[in-house]
Image (cartoon, rainbow, N blue to C red; front, side, top):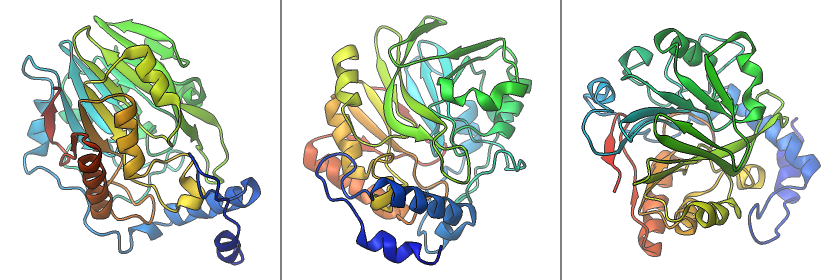
Length: 325
């Protein structure tokens, strides 16, 4: 393992386009295993810089997330959010409970959240983008089954394994292009450029998907985790312009290992351009020590890229709420 860093330094592939600068596959596999080990040991929390801010009334804000008539999004940290649209409450990639499971470990938190499942409003559906530990957290899922036993769960096929011992009345395994009608909403699974790696060896065990939600008036795109690629132009071709985009902006380093699976801030803005988003909200940053990039630098670069491209970008504090334009 001590030989890996010099090997990584000298064997990058410099092809242009998505995944530029990636290592050749054998070395990338070794590097990803080492990267996951660093993550598991909490070493990326050293010198991480400022984490995401937390609203002083975050718990109260979460409880009010689905109040009012206007569609809105409340950020719960990382890729967890509450989407209020069509009078319904949709929860994304929920990671809300303490980490008390060796089978579902979490990276080290950069900031603690002052709320949990007990603070959520009534949830109608849960959308999971993929099965990585920081997106599919089984202690949170078990707490949700107790609080909301009738909730609908939407998940990609590769994430079904951890649910073997848990039963929701309605679980929808969605493949790209498949739509589901839930309480007057149309929710469609679309591609993302990412893979589930639910193991410490960083071996691929499933795919990831993006979710498009519409009530017939507003359209929201949730991307829990992704690299950059043609999927987003395809989403625009199928669904038209997006009113609000939830797009990952963090955990984008080291590029030679993660460029294929994690967009950097400029690529996040390019996704917003591809789907003609009226508003792009940065997620997947400032909550967990996932990589060596600094949260404050990530936010600065996201805002800068948005300003340069003419894209309206925002980042929220944890517990922050914003209306869908």
